[in-house]
Image (cartoon, rainbow, N blue to C red; front, side, top):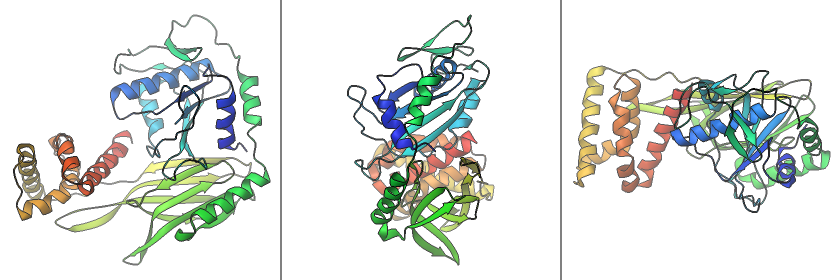
Length: 377
């Protein structure tokens, strides 16, 4: 079993970026340019390494390999993005890897790319790249090239050696368990061994709502692989497990006129296998709540009025101040109930919500996070 923290250290120690490894200070796939550049690197690494894994390490300074970390990346639909834009897409996994010297809210992102048998290319246009383009690695650069020669496997032995030096041992496992239990003792830390091999630790702040148990501020760590999942104070999840799986279901609270209900958003299932392998599966469960169109028209118009006042710098009355707190969520509900312009209005509101208060801006971020998950499903 590969210890991903050791793997990252070994990759950073192996010269510089090359045809099987790239490093980034950060990656942004919220905009077309960021998506296009990310897809370009995935395509190039996949084509340049047909017989072994390729890697992208995120959260590292380019000049001196200093590990600075990045925020947790929770976009579980990254494979769907790749499938949508690449022909013959590779299998891609994004993992959040903790490092002891980093703050608790920072990790190193590790992207593992496993090529399939055929050549990978862009399926359609994105940003300044044209559909049909094929990328390869040229040293540390991902470049478009005309494919007219056989792909050569030149990296298998090197990658195998790097991965073999990142194998686990008992000392690392025990140190990882004790470290987790000590750091998170305020959140009822627990551990469980799966398949007599995998050690999983988890902790969370318990909350009971109408006889249902939810957790927030949840940390989950696969000690053997140094892979970490995280749910923030604002998240609410349920946790169940058996001898083969560990399942987390994330919920969102949505509703109108202060009549909120919990809706399942997404499930993450860790499957443990008898052959010392594991997989992490994510499934979108969200079914948008449906409301009367007449009520939604009224709420949508009220939101638009508030937005116009914010744009003009006009004061809001007491009722409008209360409605403003729910504006991101109600715009989202309107959009999910076939009011297509509601999401454009929500995006227009972003700078004004950010300026108004941190709490309302957090609500905006939550609404757009839900939308992103739904969009890529």
